[in-house]
Image 1 (tube, rainbow, N blue to C red):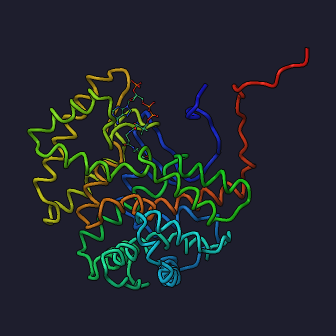
Image 2: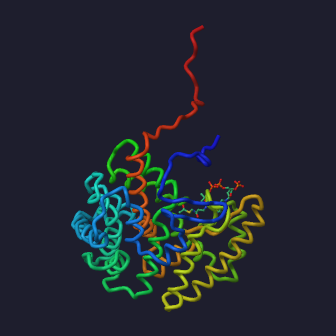
Image 3: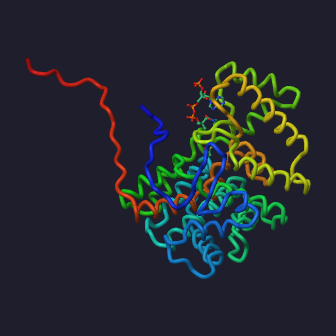
Length: 360
Ligand code: ACO
């Protein structure tokens, strides 16, 4: 039995295609390598939403206005909510949004993680949240709201590339969760909340924080091989490696490695940190190959995500929330597609528990 539903087709989608054998990702007809070089996050959003919503002429401006609208909810971040990990605080604020199914709801949902995560982080650090600036690009505004000053062009481009890279990725666990909820005809907010809850687990979007823990524990390039060997001997998983679908390198890892290099070239990444990451990646790939020769395990999206988000000044406990800033575009498009073209998702289970005694 496929308890992880691998090889089960649960949807037909026009949104994205993940080719696990060739290591290729296509979003609405455009391959990821083209997309990261040519599109901003707002362009990818337009691509994903096309045909599912009536789009305004100026989608970036509408998204900017949505950022401004959701900022009002930051006032509800009380001390109890601020004590939560940022992704849980963000989920609580997200739950306050109307559960509609129109473009206005969709854009507010896309705006929500981008606004709530920087605001929550600032409030947790004792600073006032910074209001969004609708005139900025989505990526540049996120970094401005986080740091209180405009990012460099390289920093804004690096975050934009990250958001583009993670915007959609077939029927991953969080997107499936969104589609299950949408299949009941619940609203977009309900779908996004289900997806966010699925995203936070360490086997899905919760991995990049632990990637940095791994780098800290490995400490130096020279110590990395022994550290990795000890982890694998204890049966631990190496965060940032392996994937349910990819049997070759995750193409998103290359897209993000290129963004990391962009930051490194502008001096925004400590070269020693990058050298440690590259040494750990090399030894991890060699040791995983030796240990599991029958199971191709390669670098996944989360490995270079960790380095990128660290260099952009996000604390590791907020990484899952930053992932949600990008993936929420995909969740909403999938939820709409499911509601418009799909049926109620209701699989079967096989009962293996005790049965009542039959009468003699
Ligand atoms: N490190 C060490 N061993 C691994 C790893 C890893 N990262 N990933 C898989 N394996 C091993 C498993 O231990 C298992 O070995 P066994 O057959 O001897 O028990 C074998 O490979 C198959 O593992 P499964 O769990 O069946 O593979 P699955 O397809 O379910 O796993 C997953 C995919 C969950 C991503 C897994 O590779 C993993 O746990 N990776 C680490 C966490 C991670 O990086 N998550 C982010 C994924 S990308 C994303 O979701 C955005």
